Image 1 (cartoon, rainbow, N blue to C red):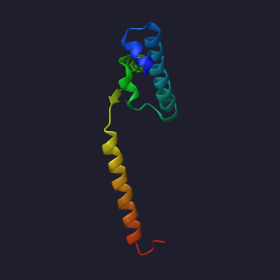
Image 2: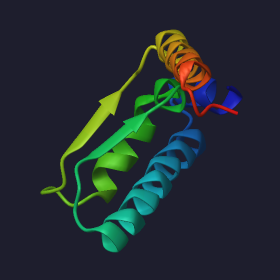
Image 3: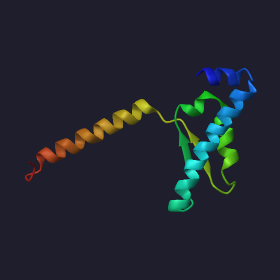
Image 4: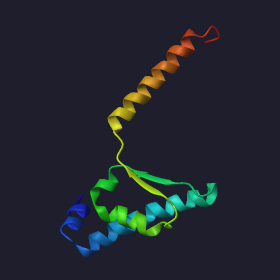
Length: 100
């Protein structure tokens, strides 16, 4: 958080660090694209809210023809959906005649 605050105060070292963090995220995405073929990239998570320099570093480090989406998912909703899905799976298994 201190780095984010320093970046918001226009500290050049903090801005460079966050830009490099975005570039590192891009490197990871590109490694997956090299392995699996080109795919649209979606970056999500709270780290992207720290400072726009992270997203800028990410965008600058990806080829322009590779689509990038920045998303901020509702984590509480996602957790509730996973819990509901797990509960459905458990009840389906227990209702099955072959269930252990």
